[in-house]
Length: 230
Image (cartoon, rainbow, N blue to C red):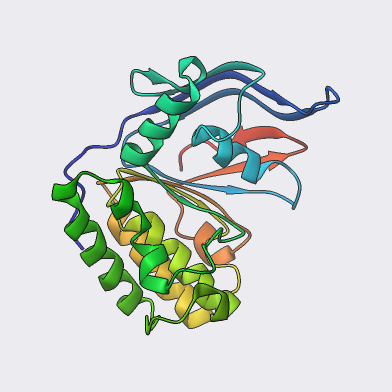
């Protein structure tokens, strides 16, 4: 898989607050900076706010206050359509719950971005999607995604996130539902792609991912704490 020709933008989060409809604070981040090409692993107990953080960084959840800047782009200042366009161009997102289209095949899901890409980019996306599925051991025979196992669905979801060769990868528990051997192969792929070329931010309970982190951060009761560089 080739490296993205688009360099990742730096990330700067300032005075970020996300509140629930009843006023409860779901996430509170005073300062969080990620340099281009950094690999950051976010850990913490279930329900602490790890997934919320990734969704905010992707522009999928509106902020109550504060700023999320990817380079010169402040997600807080963009309308929905502009955020979606930025996300398609910049971010590959691995969701914890897969979010596949059950009526589509593995190849149809993994290469889904081709349907929304300029014509000149479609073949490249579909080719990368097919290569990723093969590497992850998923056979695309035309059967619907609903008929794949949980682990296979997770691998399809990861292939979809990487098929556009995005400069930024946000992954929420990417090794969940995977056996150890497949999880380790996926970790190798993610880190090999990212080092020096892509920004990778992973929320994970997996100790094998923690051990590979360039930086570790923790979310506890909605508050982000970033460990100093080792």
